[in-house]
Amino acid sequence: MDFTPRFAMTTGAWNYSYHAIQNTKECVIAIPTLDLIDQVVGVGTCSGADTDKFETFGLTPVKGKYVGAPLIKECLANIECKVIDIIEKHNIVVLEGVEAYFDDLREEKRTLHAIGDGTFIVDGFKLDRREMMRSKLPEGI
Picture 1 (cartoon, rainbow, N blue to C red):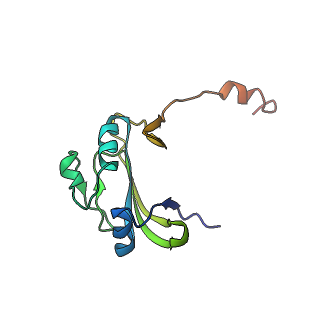
Picture 2: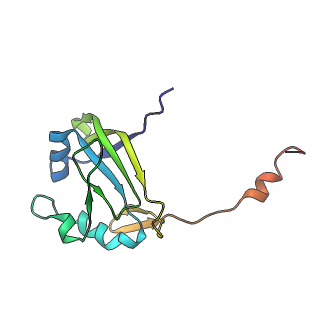
Picture 3: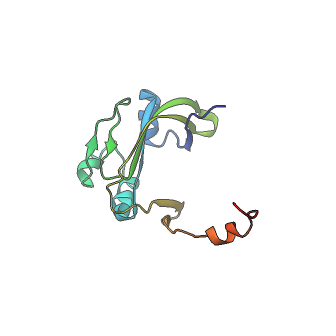
């Protein structure tokens, strides 16, 4: 069985990051939390071609172990990735995670999920169904 962490994302020639990924064959997936929503929107609405996003949005670059792209210190998690395929016909980039980092000291742990048109869903609600699941188990378990 293959337990290699793999990710796929869509992007294309219109995106500055796409060209960087094509050239370096690597990237970092940075996972922000709710307290970074304004930086997330700002980063997503400008281009790295003409904007230093770290400086503009007050983010701190951190050197990774395996890729040249920087991790983002303020993010809850970062995943260093190598490109294993680019399917140009569909603008899909397939990535393999080679190292992951999680900042368990961060107070905010609710993550953001963009759903389009400037709206987001916030993760972090805990649903407790332990009692319901216990009632379905055989006696003695």
